[in-house]
Image (cartoon, rainbow, N blue to C red; front, side):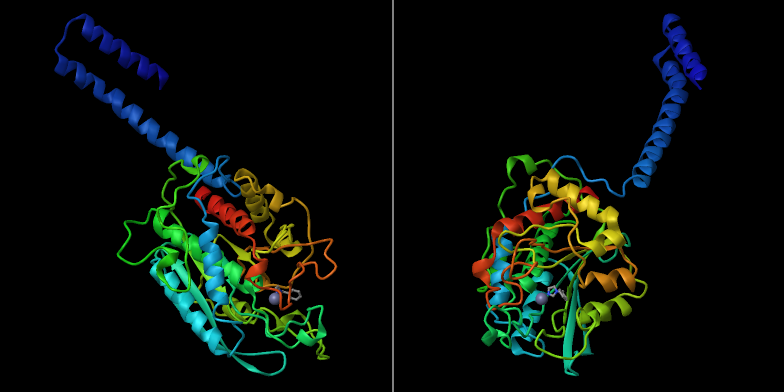
Amino acid sequence: MITEINDIFTEINDLWMRKISVARVFSHLLPLTSYLFISLLLLSSCGLRKQTATNDNAVSAQPVGPAFCADSAYAFCEAQCDFGPRTMNSQAHDDCGAWIMEKFKSYGMSVTPQQTLLKGYDGTMLRATNIIASYRPELTDRILICAHWDSRPWADNDPDEANHRKPVLAANDGASGVAVMLELARLLREYGGAGARGHENTSAADTSRATSASDSILAPPHLRTPAPPLTLGVDFICFDAEDWGTPQWDDTPSDGDTWALGAQYWAANPHVDGYTARYGILLDMVGGQGAQFYQEQQSLQYARSIVDKVWRASQVVGFGSFFPSREGVGITDDHLPVNRVAKIPCIDIIPYYPDCPQSSFGPTWHTVNDDMAHIDRNTLQAVGQTLIQVLWSE
Ligand code: 1BN
Ligand code: ZN
């Protein structure tokens, strides 16, 4: 091939030297340009294929994508809490579910409520709704982000026994994960690159319940690199009935199966036949003060490469201190049925407080103090910006 190129160049040179017409020179150039064009095509497709083959853990080494707005996520968290505890079969639960669906719709997501009746550990029939909000549902290449949206009906880990049968407001253990997902949905709508915005309201400030920074908020300078449009779809799943697990004060013998009822149902009955995703990321208690997200054991067992990808992303965006590269404990959570039944590798971003005497999930876990006063915007920011980095690196 190289000899051929040399020959062509020699011939062109020859033509020039012999002062042959420009038209003839171009007619001789044609084989060269065709050759270079085809070579470039081959090279670039090989390059792309190579990138895909080794892309499993690839996270851009530079911050990419829009700035995650923690004020907006905080407002989404507060808006859910304003309904009161979203315990199963309650009016607050139903009203908040309707609000969550409307918010996702306002960001252009295609929303599917998956309603079913589930049996609680005590035989109570629970009217459950998994809420699935899809960004670009037409794409087959997808990422799943999930969190539970129900509140625990019993503050059975409260230091005061008098509170053990009171409901948990669940600012952190419920609302925080949904809040981060709503803010991601808002940013996908705005910066995902799937076309122009419609006329819907897209700021979090469009309801009386939630206020947020305006849509015109600018990314900090280090995040202003224009990002290429996303080429994958994203599904946000708000799982219901996660927190109806057997309370500590009940004598009923129990295994882990009384938790994560909505996720168990969805994994066995996905909203789309044969649904799959590249991987999943579960957000559980992602807004607590002093939170650190150790690497949860089941996540390492089922999806180590995704753990590596997410923890690396946290370092790139400057929030590595929230994500120690250390192993935590193993948790019975919504990601287990996603891994075991739906067979989608799924990690759990969940805090671990090794030195907290009240609970290794932090001092407010399953207490009446799980309220907005204990939500920290910095934690929401660390998790949200890390997820932006992951999504915009794909
Ligand atoms: C997480 C938040 N979980 C409940 N609320 C899952 C869990 C289940 C944690 C059993 C500990 C024990
Ligand atoms: Zn809980």
